[in-house]
Length: 273
Image (tube, rainbow, N blue to C red):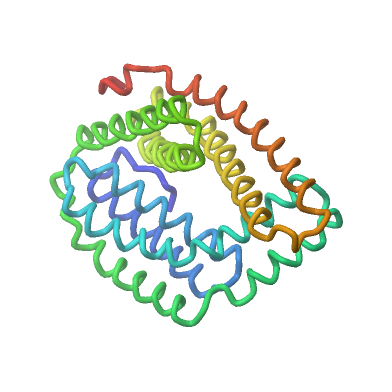
């Protein structure tokens, strides 16, 4: 099922159908663990489910608090494995595979057996609980106006996260901005059919911004891991840090440009589509 609400279906029903489709897909990916692609897809389904829940958070705060914790715990159980795979991708982005063999071997070693049987059992339990819970979500009285309110709230949170980056350009603030941008992107996808003029056109730009923020984060983690490895990397350490810093600077300029364009509209923050 497409991650997009159908205007011909009651919004509460539509949200449940999409949530069920996401959990079904997540269960399918869980069967493939610890494959790296499966980990990535499973975490992505969790992010989409959490964004969906944030859309109704103002109307159903208790539902959000209860269900969000399931998907947050599930994603966190796979975070270390995903971070290592992302670090390897960042390493390949700054230089060809043969440039830093010691660092590649170090990351590959850490990736081995990262997901253990305990983690697999936890993932399975959380997904079963999630699938059983969705049918009882109290969304019968949710209306499009409530979702519109959630959309404006998501935009406002992303815009404020961007302003915090301006005040303090830190890794943590950029990481929070990435999360808020992804929420706003997913909300725009969900409401694209209902509000095409204000939501649909933003999707591609938000996707590109989320990717740039993700690439920045992955490169930051690469540099941090290289520093932790220190002398073990020998002559590879300084070139990795220099290339990593150059890539972060380039991505940071791209992020600045995209955010300036996407978060200049105060009407969305004030609740006007």
